[in-house]
Figure 1 (cartoon, helix red, strand yellow):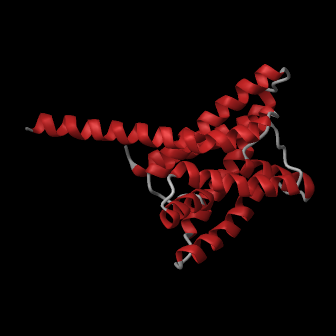
Figure 2 (figure 1 turned 180 degrees about the vertical axis):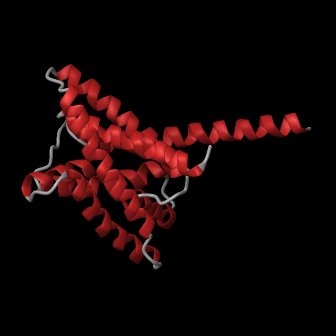
Figure 3 (figure 1 turned 45 degrees about the horizontal axis):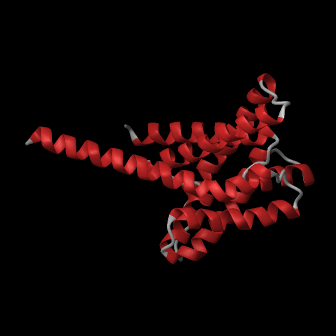
Length: 206
């Protein structure tokens, strides 16, 4: 698959998942809860805060890596911010879960889509978002697996979301506990699939 096409597909799935978790009212991920909290407390749109927070993380990543800022990552954050706002508008117009079980289903769909979308666009290795690059930076610096790297980041954002009165709920805790696991699962799945395709291709060539 073309790298850019894979990147775009991943972002579309990711932003759809984020919108589903926010719309579920079941509790967004710590990062998204922070964005919504900033929106409720200060103003601007959720997508706008996506870009602003991404810029701050971009600078932190550059300091940790002792390298130039990954400017393309900011472009991804801008595209993601726009995508979140569009999906929130569309989902909010046509779908508003009112019962707890419909909220839970909406949240779980969103959580899985976030993990899948993040995995797909990260595997394209094209302009990762600053928050996802931070996960990889922590992974490289500490040698922790992606599950623990993601969990550490989620915990920090959970505290910040609490400070800014973000929509923290059961779903937020589930995201902290399962978010890294889901990404790890999809990463492993695609790694095995890619390896099997390579073996099949090698066998056919022989």
